[in-house]
Each structure stands twice: as structure tokens, then as C-alpha cells.
Length: 118
Image (cartoon, rainbow, N blue to C red):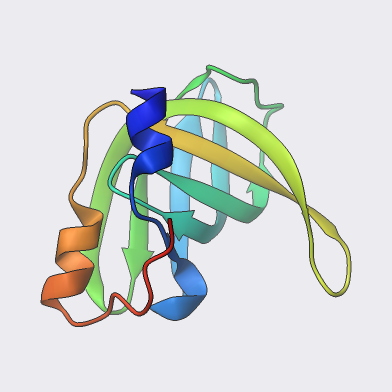
């Protein structure tokens, strides 16, 4: 699955409009913006969490955007990395879905796919 996830097409949230995530992991909640997404998982940035997060921790949540219906997901945290922005270094949270969710197909149908990146 790891190989599939990395080989899948990804779309940056900035190409289709702002997308938000509200999720629960362990005893805490997470709120943040979608950095990028694929059918295999999402990257969450600028997030707030009520609890300390751990790699391999299970997570369930909802991806929301103005242009699409809410997308429910379940998965696990697979990475916590840093990315540099113009103003500061941000932490990105990588979530791998337990099941493939055809998000890319939904965006293509809506004509929102922008540029796909490998």
C-alpha cells in the first residue's frame, strides 16, 4: 500500500480551493487545512490538535470544501514532516486512508482537477 500511495496522483489544495479537515484521533480532535490529497491519503497543514499525535495512530474525519460534498475518511498517521513557507516552517501531517477514496475522480468530474502532480 505504501508504494501505491506514493505512486498515486496528488493534487495540491491550492489548485482547487480551500479544503478543511475536522478529525478525531485517540482522545483528541484535529482541525486543519488540506495541503494535498490523493485517492490514498491527504496531507494536513496548519492544524490544531487537542492531544499530542503519534505516527501509526488511527484517525477518522471529514474533508470539507465549497465545491464538493463532505468526504468521510478513516486512516492512520504515517508521517509528520516540516515544510517551509514564506513566513515560517510548518508541520505537515500525512494520513494514509484505510480504503481508497476516489477523490481525484470526483475532482475530474467537477472539472476542478487543475494540474495533477506525481
